[in-house]
Each structure stands twice: as structure tokens, then as C-alpha cells.
Length: 373
Image 1 (cartoon, rainbow, N blue to C red):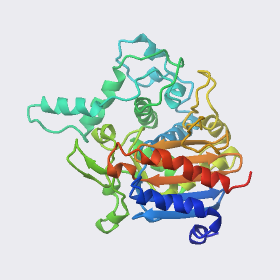
Image 2: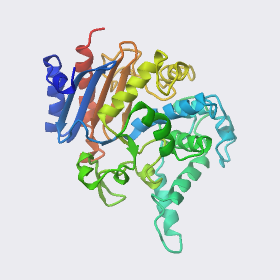
Image 3: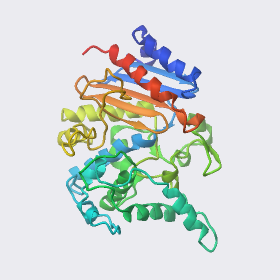
Image 4: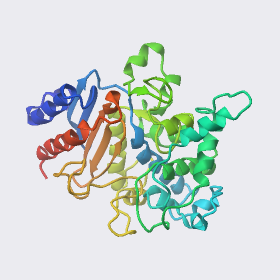
């Protein structure tokens, strides 16, 4: 079934109405939804000023791709989920517990690191102290300053004792990948994950890669008070921006079509048919961690938690996925081989725009309802 034909499928009429309604209600100004079973596209629709090829800032959907890259390097013998992070990363924290952090803790948000800090402010303050007053944000110095701050932090709890979703652990994962892979994170991701899978549009720093006539493909994410300009084609996340736009926690831009290819790789790898990931790697990526008890995270993904999951109340229990702060999400039902990719720009109306939080579960439930078990 072609995407165009799928978009006309009356079976998904409620889904189409909800997606279009999100534009009218101000939940977002642009959206693309793609639903697939295995290789078959069941439904695809664009809303607002988005098109099928629109390039979205996918924010924290960067994290599952960082995890995938980590596991590819693990398959090559460069890293291990059970490895000690301090053997690669130069922690300067006075907290001795940082020596107990394993990469699995970073992957599952169980390291004990703080969830988030405005590290870009540290970069700005350091720039003000230089003789020239030159900006460090977005430069190599800004990248190194942010990582140095994270490596110096004390933990809020023992590694593995609890979970708290955040960005800092994936910042460190990105750096560990660079150290182990001897190349920059963006190059490694392109060489080892997105390139082999065929994700041709997925990249960091898209403005450096597309022509002026292609900038209409970029979906804006609104005004930055920090940068004092509108953002289109530059990362929404201020910490990632301070790091030069390339980080393990955020910074990637992608399309619904490319993320469908990533979801398909996860599904194929579960059967031993992945292009870059093997079955043991994807098993760990799609299975909840055993410790701490009740943790909803896997080594790379989230899972639905009741009540009020953003995946919808009808989401199968084995579903894995992730959200992105800008308004993006991806959910994968590995049993039925269903992938649901929803990309929006909810932050274009301001970061406090929460209308998508109520709408997104309704969209997902309308999708799950139309797919037989």
C-alpha cells in the first residue's frame, strides 16, 4: 500500500480527524503521523504546514538512536552495557559513587545523576569571563565545558537504586561513544546506524547539509529567549545548542519516513534480520531492566505506564518507545510489529504549550483500536 493510498483509508478516519484537530486547537502547527505493520504503511497523514518529507527536531528521540549506536559499538567489542563508565570517562566528581556507574545505568536513567541542569548558563558565564568576551556556546569549548560540568557532579542516589528520566546520562553516553569509536558522534551515527539503515534525511546540524531551496523542509520550533532568535534547523534544546548541536541526548533532526526505517530495524533485529543490530542487543533495548524493581525503562527506550501513558491506554504491554520534548514520539509494538511515528512542533507556541499531552494518547488509542491483535 502506498502512503497516499493509506492516508485515504477510512478505517483511520478518527485518527485523521484528531490529527487535523490538533492544528485547530493549537496543540501544534505542523504534524506528520505514520502507522506501519512491518514493512507495510497502514496510514500516513500530514497536518498543518508539514509534508511527508518535513524535517523535525526530534529532541529526545535522539536517545534511542544513541543507544542503538552504543550497542553497535558493543557488538564490535568497543563498549559493553555492563562496563564501568569511569574506565572511559574522566569523572572529577568528589562523590565516590560515580565509580560504580555502569553504562547500563546511563542507558536506563538509573545512574543517580541529576535529571537536568541549565548547563548552557555555565557556558555563557565562562564566556563572559574570557578576555575577549567571545561566545563559547556552540563551539568546541562549549561542548567540553558542558561535559566537564556533568563529570564533576555528585549523585542524587546510588547507581541502580532508583530511576529518574533525564538528559545528563545520555550526554555522557555520547562522549563515551566518541572516545570508544575514535570519531565524532555525528560521524559515527551516520557511518554505523543511519547510513546502513537508509535514514538519508536524519542528521545533526541540518543547516550545514541542505541547500537554501530545501530550508522549507525544516519545521520551526519557535523563539529562543537564550539565543534571541527563531529556531528552524537549529536544535531547540539549549544545552545541546551550547554543545554545538551534537549530543547523545538531543540534536537530531529526522522525518517520519526515516524513523519508520529505524523502527523496522528494531523489529527485524528481534528476528535476527537487522542490518546493524543483532538479536541480543535489541533484546536488551526492548526489555525492561530488572533493577531497580518497577523501573519502566529499557536500555534505550521507555515503556507505557498506567494510567495516562502518552502511548495511550490501549497500548500493548510489550510496547517500547520514546517521547521528544519538541512534540515528537515513536512507539513500537514488537509482537504485532506495529510502529507509530508522530512528529509535531508543539513548542512553536511556547514550551509551556501542553495541549499535546491530552491529545496524543487519544491519537494513539484511535490507532491501536483499528489494528487487530
